[in-house]
Image 1 (cartoon, rainbow, N blue to C red):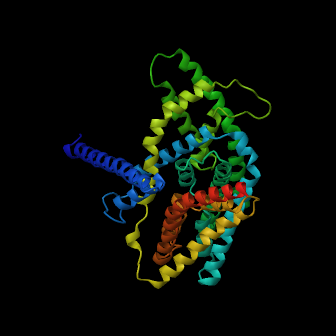
Image 2 (cartoon, helix red, strand yellow):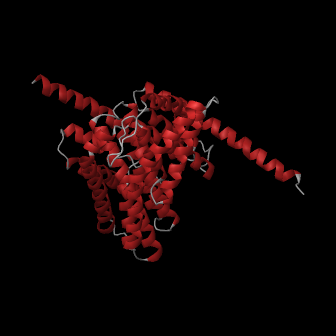
Image 3 (cartoon, rainbow, N blue to C red):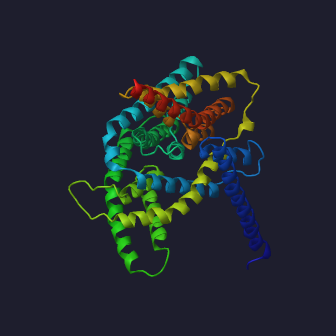
Amino acid sequence: MLGASPLRRPAMESQDFLLTLLLILLCARLFAELAMRLKAPSVIGELLAGVALGPSLMGWIEPNEVLRLLAEIGIILLLFEVGLETDIRQLARSGRKSVVVAVGGFLAPFLLGAALAYWGFGLSLLVSLFIGGTLTATSIGITVRVLTDLRRQNCEEGQVVLGAAVLDDVLGVILLALLYEFSTQGGISLANTGKVLVFIVAFFVLAPIAAKLLSLLIQRFDRSSDLPGLIPTSIVSLVLFFAWLAHAVGAPELLGGFAAGLALSRRFFLPFGIALRQDDHFSDRIERQMEPIIHLWTPLFFVMVGLSLNLREIDWASPFIWGFSALFFVLALFGKLVGALMIREHWTQRLIIALAMAPRGEVGLIFAELGRTSGIFDNEIYAGMIIVIALTTVLPPLWMKRAYRLRDACMGADQSA
């Protein structure tokens, strides 16, 4: 029989969850508005809202699996919007530069970070590799949001950064799988790594084509349906399906949202000579009806990044913490600058690209948390990595705005000369 207490417990949990969601949404909006008034990107405000609500400051909200799931949906929908607004031809033109920025910005932090940890601090090989892996990360969600706030996501450097961040995410997943296998099995299987890489490539080739064909089916039903809400329901379902499919083949879920948005973009073209009629009016309706949903969900992700930072765990009086975090923070920025310096662009353009690739955000936290839960990071090293992740997440977006002003001033001076 069902007793009274099992029925009451879910009700209380539901009330707590509703209050938690209320706090997150309101604080995210208030902090974002405050950040915009202070001429900072709104994402900074949303990150600080998470820091304020979480264990770092007030301790009102603890990160849990439900919030992580909602945040995951938010970042998937954000990447769908990014794909929807992406010019695939321009992205393809910047492909070589994106590859150079991604590979250079991936290898340099990993190798330099592992070397500094191993030889500079005398740490073990496994710990050093995990530190290097944490430094390779780029938070594509934070990067894209900052570029969007600055209205630069469709500029040349925005397309280079977008392509590089997507590739960086794929490389990060492969590296994480390798390090996890190394930590548990004591060795690495190249066959397993190759299988994951093949699946990811196949997904990127086939997923946009499949999404395009499914969108035509949605468009056909939309013409004949009198029931409102068909487009947002169908598109969200499509995005979630491709996110699940991406995870099934070993790719990050958010890349499934990006692939779906790319296919529904009015600037998408199918390879292999396949030509399908593109309805710009339908694409406009998708953007218009999906926009409120995306703007509701995406702040949850950025607040969750702030909630995941527990700055109270850090021993601020420890000289090791300050020296360790300062050195690796500088190295984290320099490592991303290496990739940007390898392409032929104006120096201000390369600086902007390096800063855009610098935020570690949730991807860096995944590496650090795996290192902690696996017993690879002790408290001091984990705290040092959290400081590095926090600084690279908050500071580069603020510096990007100044870098754009510097770039515009330099460009104006060059033209007048």
